[in-house]
Structures are given as structure tokens and as C-alpha cells.
Image (tube, rainbow over the protein chains, first blue to last red):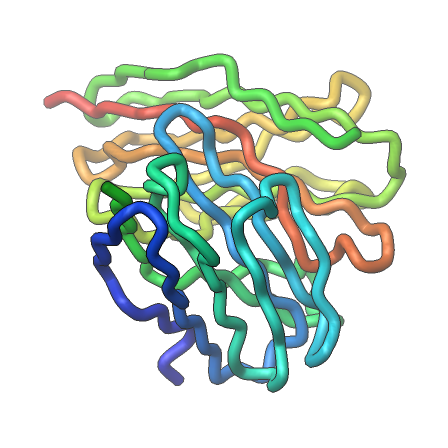
Amino acid sequence: NAGVTQTPKFQVLKTGQSMTLQCAQDMNHEYMSWYRQDPGMGLRLIHYSVGAGITDQGEVPNGYNVSRSTTEDFPLRLLSAAPSQTSVYFCASSHRGSYSYEQYFGPGTRLTVT
Amino acid sequence: AQKITQTQPGMFVQEKEAVTLDCTYDTSDPSYGLFWYKQPSSGEMIFLIYQGSYDQQNATEGRYSLNFQKARKSANLVISASQLGDSAMYFCAMRVDRGSTLGRLYFGRGTQLTVWP
């Protein structure tokens, strides 16, 4: 199993550009989440999904869109990039019914918006 | 509201010594889970240990143990016999068992641990 994969690993955008961060998991996990990590802030939830076709907002959803058309994929779209969205983005997945609902994290995407 | 507090931005420990990283949490839900993750300088998130709110015994995983004090709402991570490779950022996180929130974690701000020879 590849686990949780994210592409790209690094990205530089100009203010106002849009892009999609890709996330895929091959573990058939029901739950998937997107977090952003900023220095001194820990990880904060952007959006999450409890299954295909179902998404919900987290703590910091503004400026981001998600959709989940399949169990495997959970892309994160930046609609109009802003310097405040410079961050490291992590995708995670977990299995409903597991004892701990442990979240498996992807390797992260480092995004810089200039 | 759910909240995780890590009050130690940085900690230093000598190799082979034990170290405790503090974590307090706040939730009104009776069923929840607590996690510790390690993030080395390479950036990946590594799961270390888990404690459920109804678990009777404190969790242990090798050199890691979780000192769970439910009444005080604390879930401190204890690393015994520190190694140089333990130098990393450590995050405490909480899962709350309330329907659709099962798939998300609330994170603290992290503690940067440095192990010196």
C-alpha cells in the first residue's frame, strides 16, 4: 500500500492564481481531512469528509474548496491564492470502526504564495 | 469547545534521560481519544501513541508512555532513555467521539524537543 499520497511536494504560486492540491489514499478509509501547519500554530483543520459525497468545514475553511467524488481522492482547491495561504498542507485519512480512528498523514505539500 | 494546550514551546534533555512533554485538553464530551505525533525535521507526521478516554490503563509503546490523568484533563507524553533521534516537534491531539467529528483531530501547538549528547 502506498498509504496517503500528496502532490505536488512543493509549489510556488503568485497571488490570485488558483490550483489544486491532490490527495489520494489506497486504504479504503472513509474519513479524510486537510490540515494546514503554520509556525507556532500546530495543525488546523481546513475541511474534512466522512465519505464520498460528504464534506464539512473545519476551523479555517475560507479560501479553500473541497469535493469528494470517490473514496480514494480528496483534492483541495485554492480559489485565488493569497500570501496568507503560504503554509504546509497535510492530508490525512482514517478508518471508521478502527479502535483509535488513527489518522494516517501524507508527506505534506509546502506552498508558497508570493 | 475542544482545545489542546501544550505549554512548553521547547524542551531540552540529555541523551539517555527521561523527559515529559505536557498536554492538557478541554472537552465536555465523555468519549474521546488522545494522540501524540512526532514530526522530525523532514516534516512527516509519525504516530506515537494513543489513549482512549475509557481505557483503564495508561498506554505504552516501547519507550513512549502516556501519563493520562482524566480528572486533571492531562495526557503527558513520557519518553524514557532519550535518543538523539528523538529530537523533533511533538504534537498532542484529540479526537472527540461525536458523530461526524470522528474523522478529525484537534491539535496543540507543539513542543520542540532537543536531545543533546
